[in-house]
Image (spheres, rainbow, N blue to C red):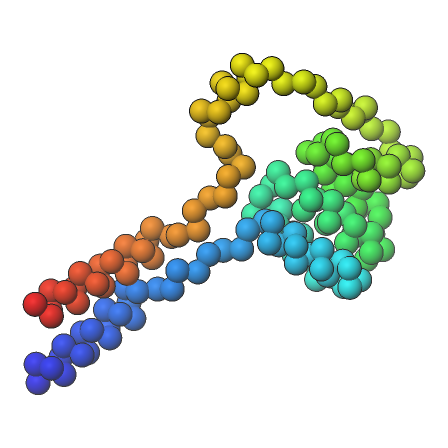
Length: 158
């Protein structure tokens, strides 16, 4: 009887506490999948992936660019233009997109010229955290449940 209740408790704790550590796809992954769909001319799926990329990272210029071109592929050029313009605003050095928009009659501010960065400025920025660094994909609640499950198992084993 004791062994049976231990097994029931073990599986109950295992099912309730231990969840798989699955990371949510990043904006970069969504952009990659969307780009694959654009290459295959599957514009509806490309639009879904680029929308997910925008949702994951609202400052990802490639996501807005892909979203705009997928909308053009779907035949909705007027709706695509704000996304393309915003992409250029996020990444003003994208010459390919700047050329495309200029050919479409869109006036853009001049592209920034690369400026020499003083060594002191680079040294001062070395200690500031990089906001573009990938964020941790481990959910602390899931990890806590997994650790809690292991602790309960150790209590019953000892």
